[in-house]
Image (cartoon, rainbow, N blue to C red; front, side, top):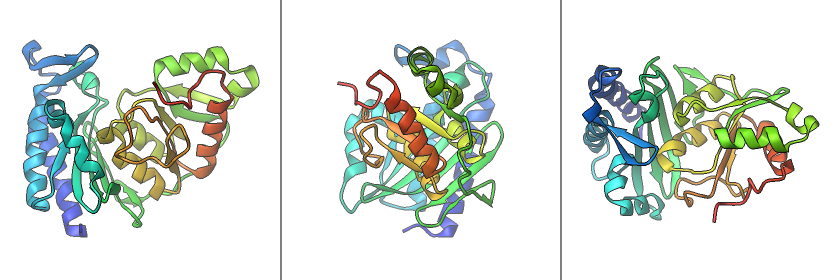
Length: 277
């Protein structure tokens, strides 16, 4: 349903949106242009403006295909049901991934778009806005990063990855010395899109998330699969964009890295691989 010309139109739309709505506001927001949707969850006028522009542009690329945007879902949670419709398509949009970084003036933020058909991700785009780096994928067609094909690299030793602060602390406290030595640097960029790009670039091997909002992960997990890696829920079922938000996610650049990351997580004494109640 999407040809190469349409994919390029998405790329152009994302770059135009970043140039018009995000970059002029970066490090230029007033206090009343930043608010908290809930404690610790920040939104800015840039998020809203960028989502409106992306929604209008995507409607022109594929007329009649609805858009599930992060900010729209905040106002209507029922939009999430569009992702799981059998035989139907929808766009999933994160207009500003890494909003907390953006609001604080840190240059780790991205824009993410994914096209879903029959509850499965079929195309994805991630734009590293500050650096103008773009990854693009279509199911069965591989993945490119700044125009060059990407293939997963061997995991190497130790395994580097992205996890949240609390889980990183638990690893340090609960893995024995031999297990912890199999893990190299573990950190977080507080921006899922940037983390997926770092994995594609070969600077990390895996990522772990407890909460799996589809706009954060639908495109990136497809990219890692197309690069020869994989993505699974904590229960080892394949990651799906419509999965419960608390189903968890382990994603990696290669099958070997995915297996190694799972083995280390399962070796810990905490119930990391059980969904939250």
